[in-house]
Image (cartoon, rainbow over all chains, first blue to last red; front, side, top):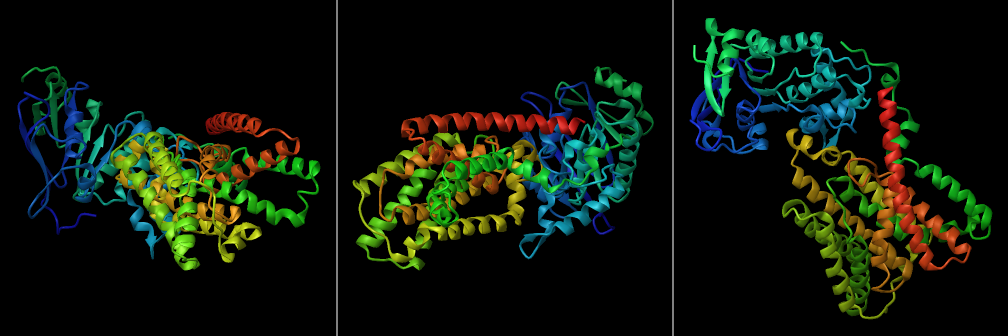
Length: 251
Length: 326
């Protein structure tokens, strides 16, 4: 994944306004950093994450993804993906899994090109690629050809994460990744996220669990009324302060 | 961590895969086949199978052609398949063979494929990029094609070269096999996975980085190419040009596709199911004709089949869901 050759990758939001008449802000996510997004539901944090992924055009300002050299403006989701951005959606059932397809096909759908040998799909290459993540994420699924709906919620989530990890992303945007996931699986996921950050991936995690982002993140952005209300890091980062900021109290 | 139960950990067997792809259709096929052979042993004697396949071939072709667009999901459907077959029939016999005197298979076959692909591309553009509802967009193409065909060909006429006539009997297997061969190739391309994912859930496909409009567009082009081949099969069978026969194939083909376990909502099923569905419809026709039922009643049968088929697909869904929850 990330070697020393590309430490300066960064995802930058410049003068971004999330809704009409709201104060613009700028924010940069560096390689190896875990940034948390928090706020009461619907206060702009999700919109911010989706804007970073190119799913929404920003109201004003721009999102720039750069790999050390000149940056490229993010203008759409597929283009964002080409620049190494991966986005794990929140609603697993509606916009994540394909219930009719197998675990293996669910895993491979975003990276089908890598299984092509001489123009045709190699089932074997797909199985081998999957095996790697099967171990890394300890996915509990004896048979990769079973339909994905045979798995528990946590394991479905791991398969979706594997889908994007297979893409070798430099920026991993996670929309409430541990929602409806059991404790043991959460611990596994936290381990994976930290490991990714060590390898130089930049992670942005939106979470409805305050404890989770406080323990996991280097920095937490708290949104309120479609504006960036507070940025907490280091000593200032604890649950009480995050909650206070969510409700609009200045420290 | 939640353990996965044994029933889901099992390797999916061939019966299960067949069931997933074709639903109730194989069972129905078996029943109908036995019924036909018992009721009408002369017509269904082994020596006549070639002729029977020839008679069924254009319907099977039309059903196969309808499938790719339907697999793309979100109302994907191509109702212009029938008229497109008629258009190919008219162009090939009236324009190419009769007026221009070109009868070489090396000209006619590529021309038919090209016409199919071009009409498919128009449908695909309207449905996937302009985003007109597919049934409306292809209904437009349907009407235009019917009109153009009847303008070129006000009354039935013409004859076809010997090589084409050859494919009217048991050799009509050849173009059908060609369609299956093309599909077999497509199934091995990344495109197939994208198509099934798009049909299964287009929003999830989009967030997985799939170029949803392009995938849908191409599904109409494939449908068009297959319809071109089906048009040639029809031409071989009737041995002339006739503008009035082909349009009727559209709706029967869609019934056949539904009967063959292809979900009209997209993302599930395949050509094998569509072919089995088409053969079932042909056999139902054959039984009803044996009882001297009028063609009007046949229409009633098609309608009933369509509704029943969709109900069966829903039942199949429910059974699968229950199997998953166990």
